[in-house]
Image (cartoon, rainbow, N blue to C red; front, side, top):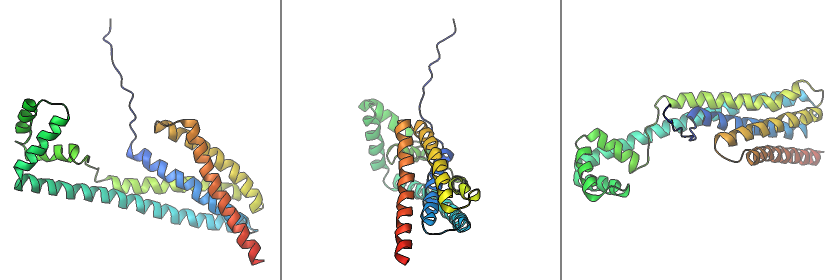
Length: 235
């Protein structure tokens, strides 16, 4: 009889998945809202397409740069904290040893076991600092190469998401007709994306799909309403 194998089903969300979610979420909603707003103010689909493409380029660059800076900030912050912990281990080792022992005791180790473990752990300054980083500060060492990867992933996902609502205007004669098809296409994509995003993050998928679609619809509706009011006031 084969041995029983226990499989643990835990959520493991990669950095790339998170970046795709960030890029697609904004890419589907922001250009959609812009195109909807312009559809209420102009009579040319060409103008909507031109403005939409310009926004997608600018938005992709901005989102990618934001992802890069966030990644670099995380790396720099971790490096600064590591340097500070090394300094404390070197200058106030007794204080740091007490902190290690307290952390081990809080994990459920007995006083005797925690004391022995502390003596063993603090023999190696590198492992000592890694322990403090993880269990005292709650910090995991970030990938130093992740920042450019995040920038490219977020920017690409934003561009893909932005082209979805804009695509309808390439095949329709008027902005109003483009807006109708853009709304249908985008809301379907938002529902699908919201559903799978919620499943991957361990949330209620149907509720997540409705929430994502409602957010996009609200943003587009507000933009269209404001543009229509401004256009009416101008005339």
